[in-house]
Image 1 (tube, rainbow, N blue to C red):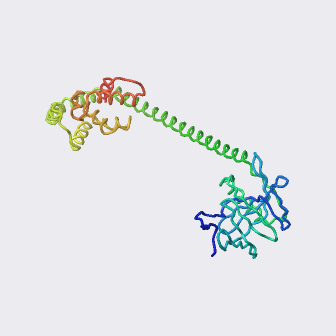
Image 2: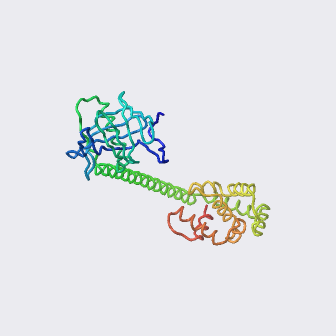
Image 3: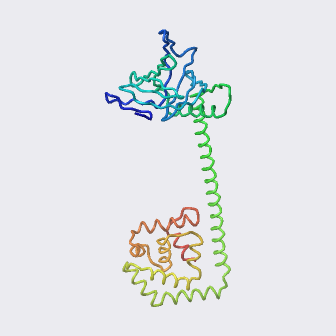
Length: 326
């Protein structure tokens, strides 16, 4: 029976050759035994489904030194309880499973005893496989050694983290600077718009000023105004067509009224409706009734609008006075 890399034993436990193994000892026919590591070095194999990556390696507290040797295809054939035939490089060798962590492979008159190397973390295993693969792919005839340092790995991770932090700080700084620049530019634009409105009012000829007063008085006596004020006094809910009509009438009496407001601050519908009702001389309590809010909310909206436009704290009454100057 051909196997990939794992098999169910007779006692139900799973033998899996996948992963890292290191050479523990070699037993010769004369019962001579060589135990590893020798001179600080041993052999390690990292098995996957169809091949293993082999290297000599030594281990210390700082990490590993590895010398890549070969990449070999293999096949396992089950040959009885805990017994396998191990096919490698065209040769068939017996492989026996001592326990879940130990296997013995017979090759060229010797028994190679391999033990699982569970301490080798997966990410370290991947690093070693990559180094062996790339070294052998280079085609060099000399065996080169490589150091896989945990300290170096941690330093690389720390450096990457530091780079990400620096990039994050730089992006945050750029975004903050851009926000402050746009804020200053918007503030300057609003100041210029307020100054334009003031100059427009100051330079308005007396006949034009008087004509506007006459139009305003006529509007206050109109059936539309009187009827609307009765509805506002009763707290009647106004529909969209009502608000459109109010806005049109006010812009006729006070040319550019809503355009001036929206040029100073991009208001919400509720904020604009508060300003329209203020221009109609509605009281805060009447505005609260029409908009289904309490009086304190209407006061907060007015004082907040003053701060947004003038960039300083002001009372709700100061906002009312400003509305009546437009």
